[in-house]
Image 1 (spheres, helix red, strand yellow):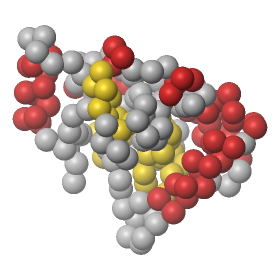
Image 2: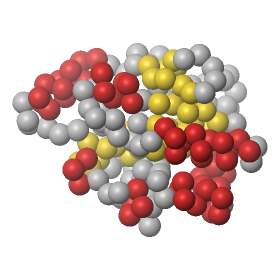
Image 3: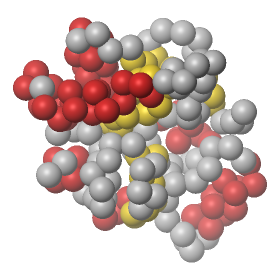
Length: 168
């Protein structure tokens, strides 16, 4: 099990372990598919997805990023769906006119254009690597970076593309 926790909105228990969570059968794993900077944008997208029959939930890591990682929250709000719906949700977010303006606000990898992004790029499963990275950041030897869960590309937050330019 993962040690770090993050807030889940709007239903369910207030906290849940970060990352994939299983529901005993294949295809029922909760997986992050869309990443936003702002909770309101994620709630609007979640509403559109639910209206179109997708089972979704929001994972808000802004407190985790601010208080545990000591970082300014960025790419902190994740829409999660069951793994069996991942491709359908991504296609819906790319192609549906009703969510086109929200799709432009999705944080994407500059390398592969995936929307499965973590910030900062550090493990949420172990305390020691996180503490080492904090120390390096405080000493100015390292910067926090974004991390793509699909292609494993990392990039500096100072050089991060805006959501609209990364979506192209």
